[in-house]
Amino acid sequence: MEKLQVDRIEKFKNILLVVLVFTTILLLYFLWGSESLEDFIFNDNDETYEVLSCDEVILPDQIILGKGNEDYTVAFEEKEELWTNEVLNTFKNFSKGTNIAVVEITEQQYKEVMKYPSIVAKFQYNIPFAGFCEKYKIKKFQGYDSISNMTEIGFSKGSKESAFIFDGNKKKYYGIVGNRPLDIFSKLDTIFAQQEATTYYPLKTVLGEESTNDTLVPFELPPAIMPAEYKKESEIGENENNSAMAQTYFGETFDFVRKVEEANGTTIYMYGYGQKVLIINPNDGSIEYKEEVKNDNPEQNSMFEALDTALDFVGAHKGFRTIAGQEIKPYLESASPIGDEKNSYRFVFSFMVGKNKLFYEEKMPIIIEVVDGQVSYFRREFINFDENQVQRKSNKEGISAINMLTMNYEYMKEALTKAGLIDKEEAKDISFEDIANKIDNLYTGYLKPAVEVSADDSANTAKKLQLVPVWVVEVNDILLYFDLYDGQPEGYAKKY
Image (tube, rainbow, N blue to C red; front, side):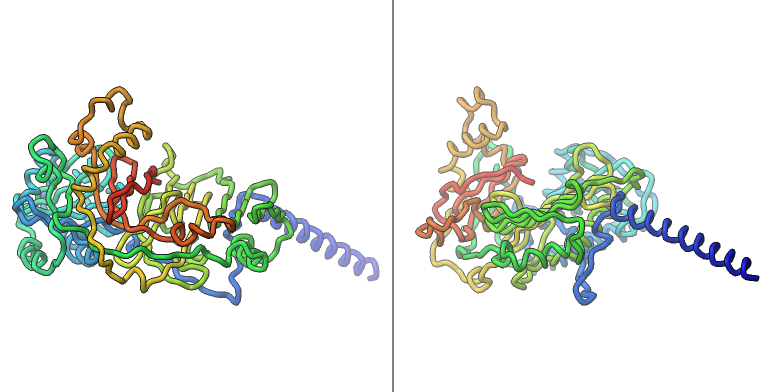
């Protein structure tokens, strides 16, 4: 009997030992394996966080309303409602029809049909068309497979039974022909009447016969927006706050995390041998996070799935709100594949200051990369600004778009040559019209200049910590900035 009792104890010990060994193996796998640290984030007091949906950030940059006389209205404030209620819903209903055919058309045919009363949604990035149809539950026809991306989508009275799509990646235009007139055309006159916006004309209309550029330019003087003071996220860089910030990335325990404090105030947290790195920089108020991707069996992810992952990550790390608690209105500035990788995407976010878009001369407020369904890079640099200031109107009169372009011809030529968009030999004889014909877009906004403020430079601090009202001239992937009032250059940068 005693021997039987001893055998039972030994068996129990063996079972317990096996359980402990397996538990140890599992713990080591999760701690040192390919699992993302995001799986181990602890939120204080089980705090929930708000996550934006794809629908809230995938919005057109502009809704262009064509009146049919080569004059246009560009809707900025009402674009979300026009996109959802008019353009998107019209295409959904259109795709429920029968006998729909897709025809590739020329650029000239596209421009000709849009000279009639029309409505066009224009994006800053290319949206995979198959993913778009799947996301919004749009019925797909056989010919839809020939459309790779959607950069513009619209409707025109020049062909009332059709929808039109421009693929900005492949520079191809498509007409999608149905069998009955669309309902949106009965609403166009009402939509036009509801807009109290500036009238736009194609640039070629203003420059004359030598210009071929259809880029829309406002006819009236720009809105007199005020400069606005801003502050960096002051809490970042203070030692007592750094640990709390790092915990949202590494969890509550730092058993495997090393901390390095540099002379300039930057704090670096490193997990393992650099598999995960967090950099908190008080000089520019930024947070930068990098994580090694070790997914041996990556799943196919669409742009929309990658964007969901990115938005969830942003939501888990303070969301679209500054540390001081100021809410911001984000917009998706860029969405692009990383290199040739099918499962890798880079998303760039900025936000609105009042009714105007904000541009950083260096970096952008949020840059996030998703590889194989995992966030591999994240950079956040928010600012706090006086919302009362951006609502005020300036007494000064802004410079017109045409005068701004004319006075900066030489500067633009030099900048585009340095950026490699104009050959040095070609630049010697290039005319103003040649420069103007290269412009892809032109609008107003706010610029955060790329200037560091040091402790011994207090005399210029007020100027440097201001958001500057600017004209933004877009040429290929270069953004050139000019003061909204005197037209003087404020710098240029490559788009992210």
